[in-house]
Length: 567
Image (cartoon, rainbow, N blue to C red; front, side, top):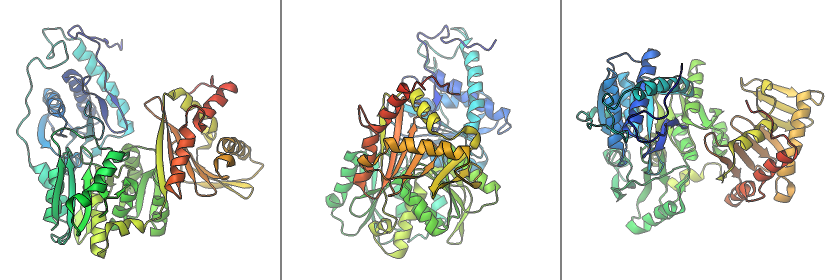
């Protein structure tokens, strides 16, 4: 019988199980007991052994960020590694991409303890096979191993178990001495390909806060000739979300140029907590979005193929088309852009990259820079996009502001409608999406016909006699009932279905709506020709109590379609 006790005899309360988010395991620190971390780590190792990714006795690299809870969790992870018959390599407190790069070069699996950008009362465990991040396809097998490991640990008696009634080790476990080679390898990934005097006449402010890569970033910039001014170092963890920068953070960056009164200020840079997502502000303290920062790296590397999430600013698509770069839109999350890179490589494409809206940049292939090889790193990295953007401006001897102002000026906003049942969001999508068997990815409405692209990138034209034409035209009319001219929306000219619905209007407005995959929320993203209009699109969609999304939900209740079975 496949049965797991919800509460083992030695625990005083029912444990909260960790679950996969968009990038690894996440949970409240209070729930991430030694036992829970131990179970999930052992399961990951058994999964890797089962698929012949590693063998019993292999070395597994481990590192962490600077959260207060990280040291304890890394010790629990280390214990699980060693109790599974493998060796642990303690790489210390270093950026996630530094750990991944070192482990990939060594052909070893790795585990990063980090909550990335989320608040300090939470943390996470990010898992890497010997060649890079686990993908969505791996999660099913890992979850199955977690259930097995949980049964095994829960079956132990009070005397047999390693854990006390709170799920913590009875006897604290220790980690080995720190291996500095991982940090060195990451530093020289950049110093080996960029000239030592690249930024010799530049002054750069590094906003350090509690980023695990704060000192490494300053060291790399100084090694490339810059005068670095480190500011705002914090012993307490600071949650920085590069995809959703707060007003307070924007004001902080705006104030820094005046505070340090440097006429020769080149830029202000920083990263999130585990240093896999970049922050760049120009000489005036103006911050730039991660998706447009990615364009700079793509250009500097002369990439030929790029994968980005469908939620990216559409200036990415406009600029990459100008640059002759093949673009592939994906669902939101690093596993999806990695899968797209892998597919491109299998298809024989070269110079392959991807990045996310948060700015984390991934390289799927090696690149030649200044006659030297930059090895592939298929996980989010903050340093590479920072260095590429700064290098472009330095080589052309122009301000950072000018560099970004040369890009297509499109504006974006994002918003979340809370307390919105996942089932309702799924029902909205099911109703408006094309028939599943049609495999339609993108449609464009043109002169009495509909141009269709499927998920195999095959295109065809539907005429008015096609049953799918009639279905799609009907759905378009219904959407235009919600997104109407009274709200200043133009006619719908296209819809992308890669992840939710990304609706394009004739005047260039874009409204991207999608239910959250793991929370009772509905998300909205917008693109427009002004920030004001981008903000307005999001406001119209998520306004309470009668915004567009709420209206869609209520209309479906009235139409009695909420009983549609979601598969």
